[in-house]
Length: 210
Image (tube, rainbow, N blue to C red):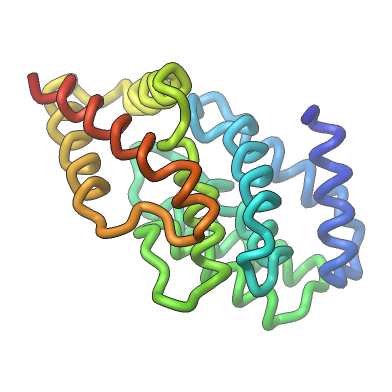
């Protein structure tokens, strides 16, 4: 999906969501952010992948377009050395969507969803949150080759972290994911990704802790 196609999708999405301002400047700003040089995994490719997964799981969401907006913003602010990326991304969503004329209730829902990607732990019955989190974590359930490329890109983003510290920190993250009672909440994502995701996570953890 080339950038022009992404911009077309953005324009259609903002129009459906009742924007009163021209969507184009906001779309260009977001794509510029997603293409920043410090990114190796959290790139336009990741944005496309999450949007495609949201489309695939849209039937499980209460408001698929709110989830799509949250996907556009969820890593719009990304500095790997900082811990407040999700909060700053949520604040960006609030500013941009208010300026664009989107209804306040929808703005609030998008910001809530973006903040949920800190934990990827939606409450039971949070159908929008379940779809966004499952779409964002779908990469874990890819083929071994795709997962290896994802893990390598994450390591590149954290190239400033010494190897021993990275391995320890990454291993902690993998253990936390493997300890979750459910990696995926929607039936479709659970069926498609859960088994492969657990195998991929376990394999990376084994390699890190050898």
